[in-house]
Length: 384
Image (cartoon, rainbow, N blue to C red; front, side, top):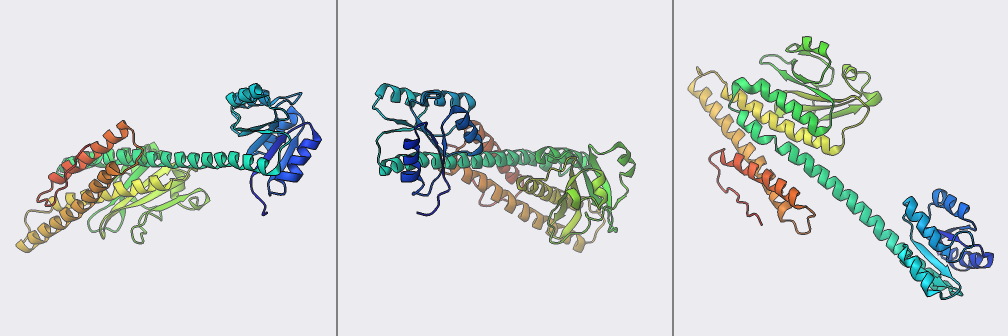
């Protein structure tokens, strides 16, 4: 047979028995096997050899299988144990099962029986590995969901501030504080352009060094935040960041363009003090929220065009507003339908609190949609 990747530890002080198991059954089947004849050696191999399955003599003089199982439980070692007995001592075998043994073998035993019991134990191991992987995946999904919930919770407040010109600085400050929290950043800045200028100006900052306040509303140059290709975010950290001025403020930086379609407004820059990269979910959340900020800045610009414009200029303004409304409605509908699909997904492992939060997001999206007239084909949520 081909070489298997599974490792088997035999705890047995009878050399004839261990050699039979190794050379007649397990090695020919391709398993990697180690033998321990003492308790000290057994626990040493558990750490260094890291077996997938243990076969242990039920009546080892120094360490019986029952003592072994109790000691493993105390140390948090989760390795399937098959007990091996030369006699049908049912009481001891049952006691071993109560302590966590997964199967047993009675000597004398045939090679086929050894392999059958070992394969059965390994099936349990493989299922546990898959279960752990699923749990990790679910934990990742739940973390993504929490990040999404945190991001979506910001939308109603942003929508409320759209029409408040005097509150734009407050909006930028609140936005930056929130996105720092959502992405796990330590500090950040927002740099925006001004009409007629290709330069960016430091507009808003959170948790930045005190001396940087003198730079507020002045030209910001870092060699990175004005160079964009297809408006893709830039994630840079460690040695790659050191040649740039941004390295003065952290060891990891996430630079996200603020834009609406082809209209570029500026850049969001998030920092981490330690060399801890931003994970994909955090980068995606930053891009998602920053795209919302781009929409708001476009609305702010449109709502504050001078009143003394020509009829042609007014028509252009109305067309821009109509296009913006169509785009916003499109993205909001997509987000609404996505959350609705999650709630309707069969087998989706969400507890009652998570479902309630998801329905809240759904309601918030619907509330925003109804505030943007005219809205045809408005979706409706049927909460189960």
